[in-house]
Each structure stands twice: as structure tokens, then as C-alpha cells.
Length: 377
Ligand SMILES: [Fe+2]
Image (cartoon, protein in one colour):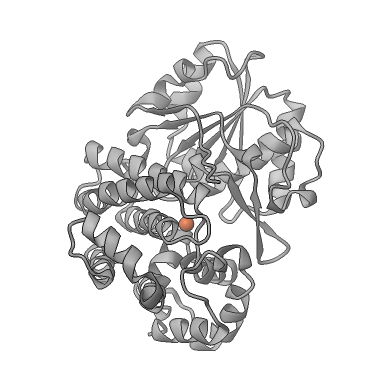
């Protein structure tokens, strides 16, 4: 049986956040809203138009802006308590992956009585959630349409909550919010979105026709738009294509989960705080090279769809070219990770069973070590 799930209401509207009161119909009868974001997004003023539109329309708005990258569990719990005390009827996640993931878990914690420590794993978050609207301000994570939230528990350990209860009720894609993104963030998050699509297309055993179709559409949007936004950050059409591509990839990997690229990328974020998109870009080519003998057919099909040729190697060449063209760092040395950290990272990567089980080729500790060594400098 193939089952495919996604968010049922997706709105694409450049400028929509400034008229947010028109996009929460039916979601918030008590007119009390908690917006979840981080201080960076708030300082950029991205929230201002939305808050004005909501308050002018008679909504009471509280802003929880304590979210940080790789959100720690205690901050999510703190946010949920604050929103509950405010009697919020709607949670709006506004920002990149971290605010959106935080908002998903907050909505669930407020909507039911499950303690957070019972939620980690697959399908363990059950019961009702508070209504949830997600508005991404970067194009990459696809978190707005996934049923996954990644939190940091303890000092460095990251744990995932994967459950249909985390799907948002509505998503708003507003390209205007992504216009000011620096080139490096646009490039790294865009490559992350491409990785989501590639890994969904090769995901075993949950690969399915709907995810395949979305992954291919995502890659064709992202491939064209990535270089355009790196050349001209104010190209609203390219920014919209990036958001749509990232969202399509999110729909794909939410139903055909990611694999070894993500498993090997996580230790870079967990131990060294390398941003998620950049971590994926760093390990991408070497993981694809390792996978190629088992993924030749799938990579070849993607290459063919993108008119790059019909060989798997054509896709690898294109991803390497895109990394060069967008000037993302290519080695661990460039992000200040020394070779002596490789055994620790390899051990950590091997614990990511949730991801490694989907990889088209079985990943071993030795293979992971070799991949890290090949990108060391
Ligand atoms: Fe990712």
C-alpha cells in the first residue's frame, strides 16, 4: 500500500504576510495568536507587516522569539507554556526550519497532554494539536509541509519527532520574505532542498509514485532558480520558484524520507553548528559517489528528466557544478572542522538509523569515515 499525506491548504502569494489577516480564516475563533520566530527574523522586521495586519483586524498577538538554531527541547517547552498562558488559539511558525519545527511541537504540546519526552520517534505524537499555520522565510528546509521536527536534547544530541499530528493546517509561501537572504544562505538552503528531492527519489523502502513526481518537479524548479537567486536576490519569480521547489521537495521527503546525505550532515551541525544546508552541501557529492553503483538507475532517471544526459554520473556532475557556481564551502577545513573529529562524527552518523535505513546502498562505518576523509581538505 502507498499512503501519501501532506498539508491540505497551501497558499502562494508574494506579499501575503503583510495581509495575514486574510489568510487565517477559520483557524482562530478566539482571535488570540502566538507567533513563533527567532530574534534574527524579528530584527529584520519581517514580522512587522503581519503583526500590524493582525492587530488592525482585532487579533491579540504574542510573539515568542526565543527560538535558536537546532532548537533545544527546553525552549520548545517554554514556548508552549507561554502560549498556553496567553490562551493562544492559533500558532504561527514564522522563519526558517528552527522556528517552524518549534511551532509544530508547541502546537502539539498545547493541544494534548503528552509529555515531550514521549514524542521522539515515529508515530508517537498522537492526539489533537492547536491549529498551526507555517510561513517559511528561507527556501530549503521544506519544514512547512513535513511531519518532522528535529530538536536538540541534552548538549548536542538531536532527536526527531515524526508524526502526522505535526502537519500544519495551512502554509503560506510569500517570496517577499526571502528577498533579503544573503547569497550563501540562499545557495546552501537551496542545495539542501535539492538533496531532499534526490534522497526522496532514491528512498528505500518508502519511494512512491507521488513523491517521485514531486521530487522531479522540485528539482527542475530549483535547478533553474538557484543560480538566478544567487545572481539577483531580488528576482521575485526566482524566489517564488525556490519556495515552491523547496515545498515540493518537502512534500516528497515527508513521504519518502531522507537518507545518508542527511545522516552524515547531522554531526556537522550537532558538534560544530555548521548550518544544516551547508552541512548537506558539504557531504553531498561524496555520498552520491558512494551510492552511485546502487543508485545508477534512479540518478540516471533524474538526470534524464533534467535534460542533463541519461547517466547517473550526469547528475553528480551537475550537483558539483552547482556547488562551484554558488561558491558554497567544499571542505571540512573551510568550516573549521579538523580531521581528528572524523571518528567522532562517523560514530554519530552511524547512529542515524532512521535515515540510513532509506539509503540505496548500505552505509558502513568505514565508508562514512572515507567520505569525511575525502572532504577533509
Ligand atoms: Fe535537510
